[in-house]
Amino acid sequence: MSKTKANQAADLYATARENPYVQRLVEDQELRDNLRDAFEAARGAYGRATGNGKGAVKAVTSDKKVQKDLRSAAESLREASEAFKAPRKRKKSRLGRLILFALVAAGIALVFSEDARKTVLDTLFGAEEEFEYTSTTSINGG
Image: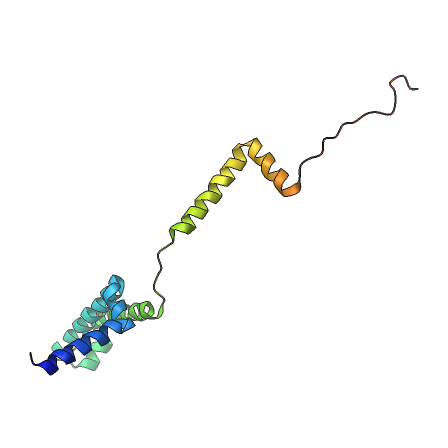
């Protein structure tokens, strides 16, 4: 390869590598599957519409298989388009799971442990005051 062609190839590679759509296409298996399904359905519809000798318009309007293939291609393209528009799904963080686990464990501890409940209630609302009742009336009525 000549020097200029090598430079052009390197520039093309760098441009493609920086392109977010190309990166998305490389990383997202579902997007690639949708595009491949759309291509195959469209190719099948085209082959059936042009190969039957009736004409493309007649095939599209009357042939159910052509209509099915076109519908499938359109659906796959719509899904691929939505995948490009939608933000990439992020992996759930471990910190979120840890916090959820801690909250569930704390809830279970509060349900089953009276000492834990007393401690939490005392912390939130203050310690209970001890109350002793002494009667001012006597039993003899006097």
